[in-house]
Image (tube, rainbow, N blue to C red; front, side):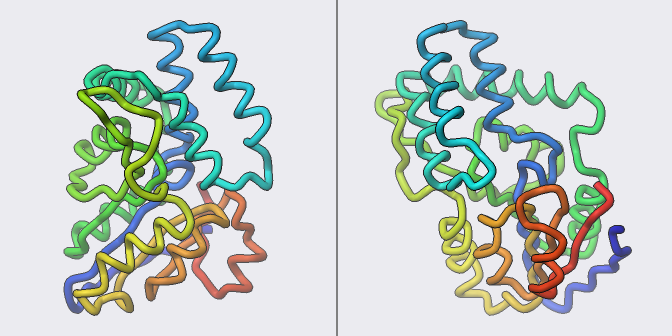
Length: 227
């Protein structure tokens, strides 16, 4: 069960939240792509995308590889169209029940009340993360950045994907000048989140992902289980 927590912030600290299957109950990337093909049907493009998923998305998937391949299928899409679709996707998903993982959302709100700077850290992309952040009053997002040329996405990234070591390095960079790693928190659900969780003083695992309760216990980290 989730432990009731009271967050005391003795000096300015951060609370980093993975988003997919941690703060929200779905994978925003996969959900958005389904939504996109409903908006803009393209049987050839969708077939190619689903073939990649079939090959690379499995229980032992390397999320860095999946992340890069996923965005290859964005090549040629208008940045404006992606932004507009992201807003429509959010409204569509938000209308469904249980969009957020309530215990995790409750902790995010507690961090905000205690004065922590809440930051999203996600392999997803700004067009779908921004509406979530806006609703929750989150002003900082560390996300995978898509290369653009003349208002069109190329299918490539401008930096390593915000997955695994990418999350760790981004958080380290943010904390480096502050000296507040020991009072900061991070929330994640997947084995790929271990590097991120390892660089803060208060790592929290959300059950249901590939980071099992047994692994969490071995690492000595707190577990939110009732999601």
